[in-house]
Image 1 (spheres, rainbow, N blue to C red):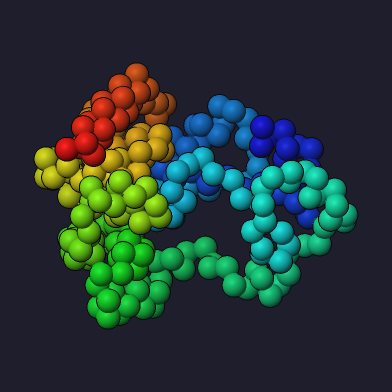
Image 2 (cartoon, rainbow, N blue to C red):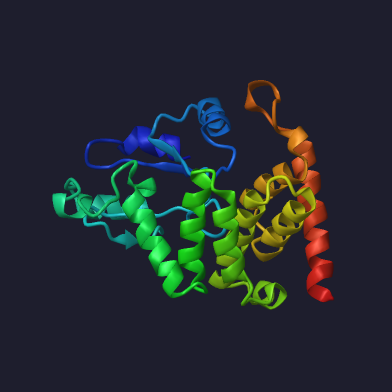
Length: 243
């Protein structure tokens, strides 16, 4: 659908940007994009640092950087008439590529985390940078301090933004527990219980059984196993919430 829209409307004034939230990195996402002939710009967030919650999700952003209602987006384009390029003022506010792991940026987040270790948003952002730098112990430390204030089951029952963010934190925690398989599976399962989406499900299935994903030809993965894992996790989640 979006490839067709890009071919119809793509220009200097309008574009479509895809973002794959995939802890497996660029290679499998690239295979997916190539399989479906995607030619619009596509990015990958291997650290799952974003807070989109359930995926897929679509945003329509105007040239002033304002997020608009997605409903009738083609009609909105028609009413806007000739589109203007994004202003320099808006583009100057974007984080330049590569600055996410800038030492000063990480130091700022670290200071904010020291001031309020229970701020889950800061903790997950800081942990995602530590994970990108292979600093698992540091990521695990900040996540555990932020997570301990929550009762995961109560948050999961609320099904709000806290549940999605806490699910993200548990997913990052699982990634920081490499070498402790039992702890990884527990954290990954809790991540799904809090945010039961297909996007999370693929990442969690990979943690549960990496042999079903790693080293497979052409970066492919065992989709049958993933679907079976999602069904099992959904059943486990129901029992966990009912307990």
